[in-house]
Length: 238
Image (cartoon, rainbow, N blue to C red):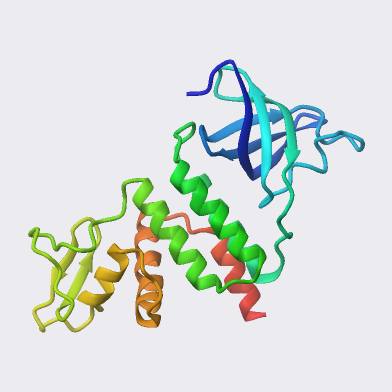
């Protein structure tokens, strides 16, 4: 948990919204303290030092104080070295931020997830393949939050066999296919073993991972659909 004063923390802005007349409430994702809500006092004033610093998808070093649920941001410095996101890369960034805000508990440190998020943003900023970058981030997100099932063993604890097909049942994991399935998609064992190794280099594995990650994430976020995905689909239609 955060102490009274926390200094020199690597962080990213996940979300901001106006607070009172001149301030923002900022949802920060820090490496050592997880997701932390804090007030950026006076940041909405035209000449405020924080006004041009609190940008999403940019690496920051921040300090804050306070012991309650809502901390006070006392300093923030841009660390530079990363291009601003635009186009579809920007929408991918908003999608990742929405997942973190919806799924990550407050003040629960996940350094590995923070590093995966930072890697995702770097890849998006240099126009690396977006599907590959997103799937790698989603895998770490599910694993870190304890939602990712074991991909290399089936529900009976037997090792997944690369030559066999499996049904993937949420909350149960891989179930050997019997051949009688008609409406449910199956996954080759070799794809599941790739996912267990976090190896997305095979195009078949990457394609199957997209469908599987979508199912798992939809199950976690519940009935309220992801706003970023809805906007992205509408933009594609236009």
